[in-house]
Amino acid sequence: MAQPKTAVVRSDLDIVIARTMARDLAKAMSFGAIDQARIATAVSELARNIFLYAGTGKVTVKEIDKGGRKGIEIVCEDQGPGIPDVDLVMQDGYSTSRGMGMGLPGARRLMDEFELKSQEGVGTKITCRKWKSS
Amino acid sequence: MDSLRIPILKIGDILIASIQVSLHDASAVQFKDDLLQKIYDTRARGVIIDLTALDVVDSFIGRLIADIAAMAGLMGTRVVLTGLQPAVAITLVELGLELPRVLTALNLEKGLSMMQRLTEESDDGPA
Image 1 (tube, rainbow over the protein chains, first blue to last red):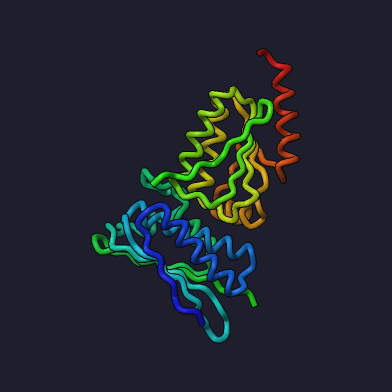
Image 2 (cartoon, rainbow over the protein chains, first blue to last red):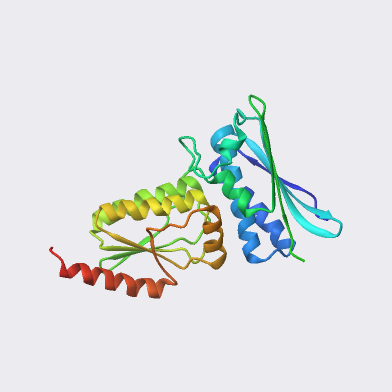
């Protein structure tokens, strides 16, 4: 299994780098073209959230295996301000001034599993996974 | 860092921009500004934005394209989006960005004939 790969996000260029890294792994794992696009788009949304709201953070992608089923896991972490009301930001259309209200719920729809942990003043960690259809 | 510029070609009174590389946010915003200025400078009546080469269109780029279409519309110019890959169409709808007010065509050729029809129709109206 390939080593996990990490991209540091601190500018809008890094958003492209992070999503290309995720797509390359998805492609190497033989995900179909549509799932590759879903994974790359989800990473783009999550990396942009890091850039907009935390300033810096990192995105890690890795191959996972659960009882023989292969998948890709994406972890996005930042030490930003955190999210006071997680339920609120997961609502479609909710947005602060700079976002457009579809980043987090949109990314959740594109992936199979989505977990968000956030603590005000400490940071945010999002873990999401997409499984290969066997 | 300088943002990357997307070339905008003029054929008759139509502008064509083909986005060939993955855009980062700053170059996408630069493209919007360049395109609107070029519409104004050339008095273009239509703009075709071809996305055949893009394999990811996230909510930022999707929203920006919808904004460009709305802004060009305010200036009296039609925008047709062409060449969306199936995977891009699927992820846009799953994201919740259906771009309801943006005209689209399957490919550049169909986009051009659509644009010709649109600009001919507007010929019948008052100048």
